[in-house]
Amino acid sequence: MPGTSANKNSAGKNSGKKNSERSKTAEDNSDKRNSADRLEALRHAIRRRYGAAAQLENVVVPTLGGINRTLVFDLIEGPARRRLVSRQESQGAADSPFLPSSMQFRVMRIAHAHGVPVPEPVFEYEAADAMGSGYVSAFVEGETMPRKILRDAEFAVARERLTGQAGQTLALLHSIDPGELGFLEQVADSRDPLRAQRDRLDSYAEAHPAIELGLRWLERNRVRAPRRTFLHGDFRTGNLMVGRDGLRAVLDWECCHIGSPAEDLGWLCTRSWRFGDNQRPVGGFGAREDLIDAYVAAGGGRIDPAEIRYWEIFGLVRWAIYNVWQAHGHVFGKRRSVTFAACGRNTSLVEYDLLMTLRGLYD
Image 1 (cartoon, rainbow, N blue to C red):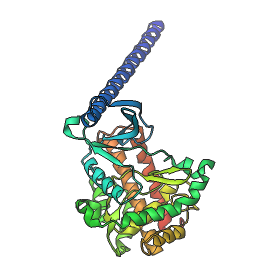
Image 2: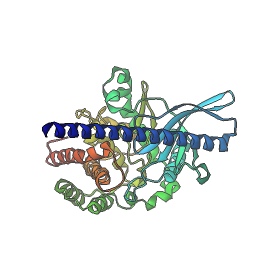
Image 3: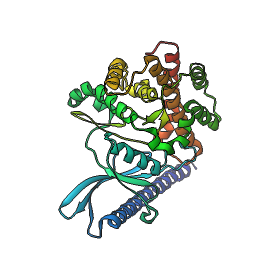
Image 4: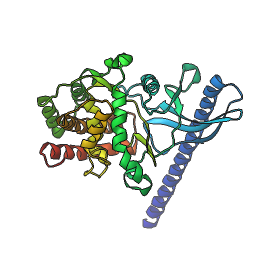
């Protein structure tokens, strides 16, 4: 009977709704338990180093930084209070292009010792902490959201200063003797950055003609590096902590390697990191000529603008491949996330920028 069928459908919908609600409740409870466990593990790690009287307060989970598990908290030691950041690896994919946390921590310590504006490394997690791989660093107040930095009136003065500060910071970073970072020579991008991108793309067994064209152009137009320096590898808008006075810290050191200094400058100028402000190719806030001038004035050495253009094109190829990696991990791996799924669409957007740049239609 029609009525009976309708009642059954209604009952099925209600049952499905209840099951969905129960599933959501179970997930919420699981998240709460995991959060409580992580907080307790963090408290244990802190007290191992600072004593049983050490306290944690004002614990916050940032809304950004999805690749790593991040907590911001106050460490209380008697009358002293210090704001710190805990970062734990949450994606241990074998095909990850990122440095393990232990290498990141070593790099940050060296950079900090040379006066590079990096959050002070405090300690690295050990097996006894039961926190997995990760570390704790000092907290730096500021903004990383590109749209705010590039558009809000609050950062008008900062935007005027950022190009010069970026040039000065990169010159200082590149002045560090790469011999101090010999452990980075084993990184694929240190051995041959173009080969590293090719190998990553091939590992996904996907057809990407635009990226193939970009790789071929890069191979045919290879530039000879005038010298090999320590590179940040991901120096760009979004990884720069900015205050009203300008650059306060450089974040995210997971892509460091040894290579041509122009690679860092070209990455900062790559179209993807202008966030729509394409008339200002340096991160959406400045001009290439001003970046080069600031870099030279700070002792970085002269860099041919043609080298920067080469590395901008390389940057589009590299960023497209990183998006392929994230989308591939969502579909075939364990990195389930709406953000990673969206990287599949983002790959096409970057490929379009790459083709337009190769044709000379995009600056």
